Image (tube, rainbow, N blue to C red):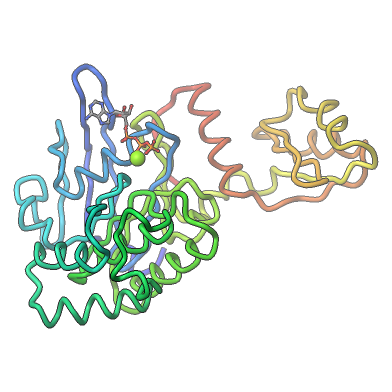
Length: 318
Ligand SMILES: Nc1ncnc2c1ncn2[C@@H]1O[C@H](COP(=O)(O)OP(=O)(O)OP(=O)(O)O)[C@@H](O)[C@H]1O
Ligand SMILES: [Mg+2]
């Protein structure tokens, strides 16, 4: 853990949100370190957006605490807190009938930027996110990728301390995603901005400094990508079967020593249950010499979700 990680911007403690009888977020606790990229992961409906909306002061928790810089009570001081953050919601938030420039001018005015500063920020962000040529375009006619770039610019106009991005790259092509992530890094590393981001893309999760994984409203793991993979390291083996890979997979997939097995291109990968690594290596050796494979975050989360479903046990921290 680095020195940075101890400097917390937002601390979430025992956060719970119910909608009627349904508990969407269940006693979740974590710290968001300042100046870092903090990833928030979980399947659809697991409570990511609900948690984020509470952190942004947009939704009141049923119970629990959210504390900001200098002990700021975010629940009680939501109005002043909102001015210090940039929020890009999962739902598209721009006005479709306005031009891109008009949208940015509208949001800049809401943030209270002067005319000169607003013009300078729009020019800078439009250049950085490469949408200058669309400033006069009616927003409705933009592709998803460009709409997301404009929405990101809108969240950044007032140079917030905390940038909150709820699935910012859904529907964005690889080039656009690269542009987003280059900027996210630049903001965190060069300008010390804290970024809280949700994503379903594991390659993006891999790039976060810290990750939190929630399932059914409960936090089930947190740590760096490297730490999270620790429990599966030395537990994954792969081999290139000589014949049809599907046949090889079908021949081993029900073995009791396996946590998971799947095809990765032409390779057969097998994840061993705890304490069964040697058995799995032996199992695969019928197809050739198995080699150890580095776990992916997908392996980690599939494994966590399985253990959770099997035991419904409380949070583990790595
Ligand atoms: N206003 C609401 N009223 C009732 N239920 C809600 C409300 N908002 C969210 N929920 C429910 O809470 C659960 C968590 O929703 P949430 O949007 O936080 O999930 P999510 O992790 O962001 O999912 P996704 O990956 O699909 O965006 C879902 O079952 C959702 O239907
Ligand atoms: Mg969501």
